[in-house]
Length: 80
Image (cartoon, rainbow, N blue to C red; front, side):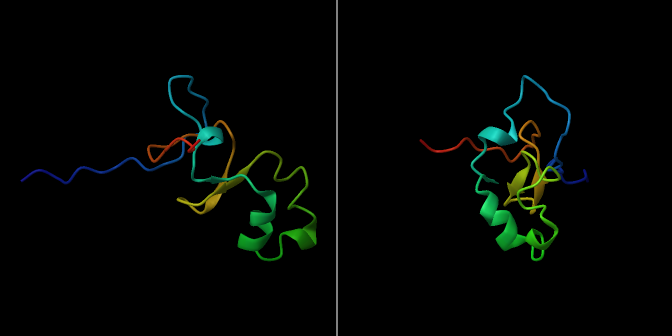
């Protein structure tokens, strides 16, 4: 009996021009205010709008911060 197929759901941090990236994914929460709502206490440290977050945003699938050029197998393009 063969092992079940495993979906590679990891986030790749190396830019790959052949793959769509998180910046264009519908699962990337672009609103910086959503970071403050999802990560309690973040604004207290000034990080919600600071350099520590920079262009990273929350991925609602992985529930973690992703950079615009990150990518994963769960990518879906933004709707119009």
